[in-house]
Length: 236
Image (cartoon, rainbow, N blue to C red):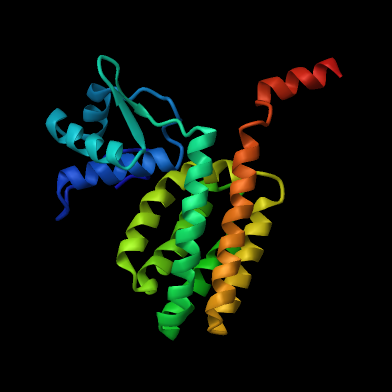
């Protein structure tokens, strides 16, 4: 399969609908489609090599996940996350992620903790300036390990759905000056607390990590656009 940005599917044991769903989801999460962009069904059918019926089933699932909106007589488009949406997402994420970190610290095997540490090492080896997609995938890898080892599948599923929408915001927060380095340092501290089996500290650190990311995400709604910043610079 090509990268999420290429969209062309491979035929394998997974159903075509699921393949279309996963490919479109990745394309949205990693920036191939931008918030508010209209999704043309005929174009997507051609690029994915699937029927319109199958495509619409995939789009319906992504709509349920909050990644696209579908307006009558206008068709589907990539969801735009508002400031209020972001605030609610981060508030919910802080509560859920803090508890999952607690559960992971108590229940995870030593091997799962090693996997969590390895996911953070992958972030250390990533370059936010040249490969944002790889950074986002590495960060999502951290959460995949956390979800799997927490032992609470209901909360993990809830956070996974939130995390898909957070990934759309994360492109802004991680590109904020100094945030990537701060993120890696915060995750290092979380891993240390987990290795020490200090569940309360791991939970506290996870909640603080989410709050810090949320503060940056919310502030980005009030930052000037590149065009506005350029205009201000010329007038200064």
